[in-house]
Length: 102
Image (cartoon, rainbow, N blue to C red; front, side, top):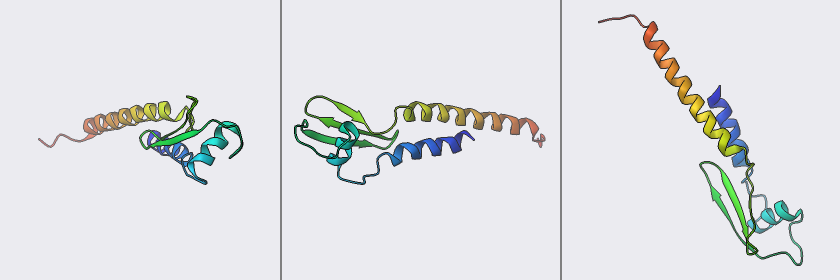
């Protein structure tokens, strides 16, 4: 179950990075609510990362904005630990139930 939730949360973060417009318009819309306008600070870049998903927009005024929701990375970490724990418990339980063939 935790593995399925991991996939769902990861995809939520990854879908936030799908470019429907160029990086400038995507980031400017996220920060200011409009894709373009006069008097806005100069846009630098959009830095994308895959694990965990991240997409940080940067402007010359020092402001940065992550397009991926803040809960994605911590939830993915928790779900990895839960999945590993469940796999370990399943392995131990399976070993106890198997008949001793030795």
